[in-house]
Image (cartoon, rainbow, N blue to C red; front, side, top):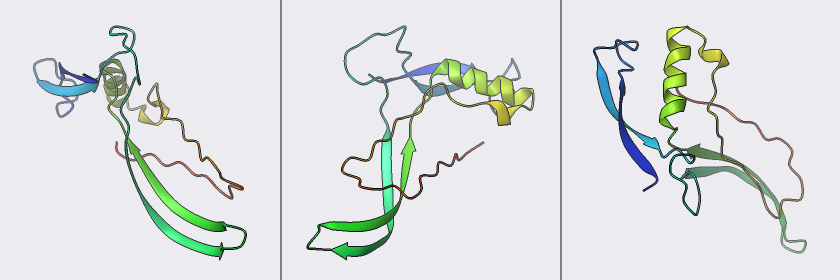
Length: 118
């Protein structure tokens, strides 16, 4: 499969070595090479505005939100816990992000990325 369960130090107890959780993580692509995509990305979205519709030119303007979620690897999670323990979360980011490509797009006025969670 694309995910695997691991026993890791508990997030709730600030990495207390006596407490553990069993969590699901993305398979490490280096330890389990396989054909096909490395990560599954869960996608949802909403259109917030549709305007300037021109039927003759077959063009329109669209504002939308696109939400991408994915499982991180066990190593990324342990690195995240280290940064949390050292209170340096602002410096942490996952090793992998999905790439976003908008095909058939004539013009992009703005593309902003936000992170959620802590």
